[in-house]
Length: 455
Image (cartoon, rainbow, N blue to C red):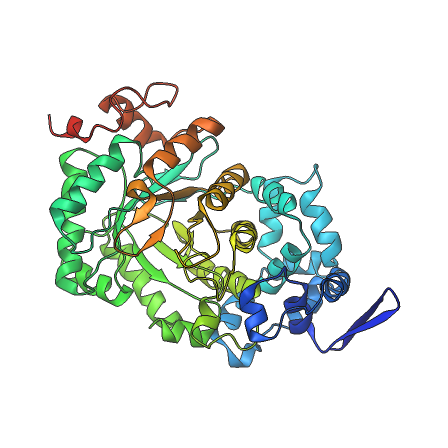
């Protein structure tokens, strides 16, 4: 499928839909590194002009990796609601953008349409949007997840309490958990990234969190972010896990590099449904981020934004409770600076919601990237306006185990106050009873004093 347009008297030909999608992308160092991004601003504008005239049917008929060659493509295409697709397949991407942004289009209307979308459609329409478009479009869509408890309801903002420790020391982890709880963090999940990825260590950490939840009657969920096969064996041996975690990607080859495929995730989903410690129905936790495929040479020449949308399309099969985007985690080889990281975060949040996923965000960054704390806070505030379900809660915003910067317990409390949001309902009442928050959702004088849990 050859495509072309003329801009200011210059002809811009494109070989196929994959090239149009790549060159319509906003500037990303990963795309430049692969040699697939637009070489000039004019070429980017030309690609966007061509993209806006493509129909949804064009995008479905021309996936960036053929159906026969890639498991992710097959999973996404097989989930398309054919009756709704027949209604909208003639829409151009330009019209689809206007439909989403129209003030008369509701979130429920968008969610209905999303059942008929492939990931190339999702990425394509996002490429035509400005930052404000992405914030406004995403703000219309609310996706609620339930594991033990619900997160994502209107008027709420939740947080994953992330008490990582460089030696997996339970006392150190417990201290971080209690500090985070004293600032109102932890209603999404108390989740640990373990240093040692073994069944015994995963069981030990799952039991430790579960014991803390029981001791103080904390209405939340637990998770240990070891490889999913490690978690599966831990649960088979009796460990109490509320959900399974796994990093996933937008190509079959990348998922293989992560040690997963559809068959394994199907097995894991069935296991956690029958032997997990929570009723669900949303019992999976996925982590994603732009550039993961190119960083392990499994991108197939596809731009990192489109691959991220495909990651969401693949994850949708498992009705996750949480999807956590960490596009700033890799480094400048994928997203060079604060401007690129902010844009990628807004794209990812919008694309995830448009796919139908309960999106949480970690507008994080590594210390070798050209970004600073102000960039990170700008992304955080914009994403909160866009309606992100949750953020991370990391002591002082500095993860001493993973060596990157993220949102702190203090940032989390500030976001709620800025936007007049509260924790998930059951967790909110628990915090009131513990004296951490008042009835309006503001921190009390006791907040930040972890000793209140030891009295």
